[in-house]
Image: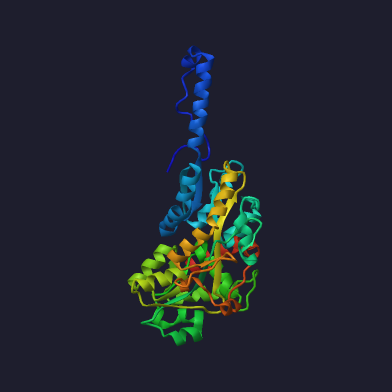
Length: 359
């Protein structure tokens, strides 16, 4: 990664003080102009997202084409979701990040803490094209990643998964071969999602915590910390059932892994997209980047690669991408989360997670 200050200028070619004293005014003016041209060519645009295969896709599909169009030097701050907001808080007022990919509880937290700026609709034209339920003044989802229940078809039958749903994670056949997502990854969203049909509320996650504790403590559940780890665990057969992304499940199916996908009550239509970091050095470029990330081409390319669902109301998904289409009836049993409410209880629930589930 470039070690120069993000979004700042570098003047490594400036003459020394003695040389400046010798040079005439015309020569100095020429050098100053040259230095400004170097500055323009060396604008560094910094993107924060997770790493791994997801981060690489963002680089190839969105970031590199955008940088080429605008003559930018790219820098990436790739780190787990749980660490990202802490970095933005630490650099508040003088951030080193221009844009961050957000979704779920982190979006609610970032908005509440004033870490992200409002979308400028005069620049981000694609914002208005996104389905209303998948955008707000600070953000818009460029895709929906259904977070549902993946299972090994050699262990469980489709009919019993449809009947028992999440409860199958407590089945003895899954003992030691089941996983739950870590709280700082997708665990918080999953807890709130399954909590709704279990009768809980934002203030009361007792039903979901009781269930997660049983999966981990009584049925030998693993703590899954990332997409790539989940892919590996399912691919090797180390786990046979877990909440997981629809697109990644389908990707494993295409590789010959015997997996099915079910949508129990409380599955999550999780959306993710980029936001502009507040007071960033390249604010206008960040707005333009958000617009590029929401474009037809970017959405369709991501959908084709990961089998997720685009979010533009007027975008026609090609018929050869059936996995990127969702039945409207499934949304009747999906979780409908207000992440601003979720964020209010994040600290308390993280403490509970560490004490009741992980320890």
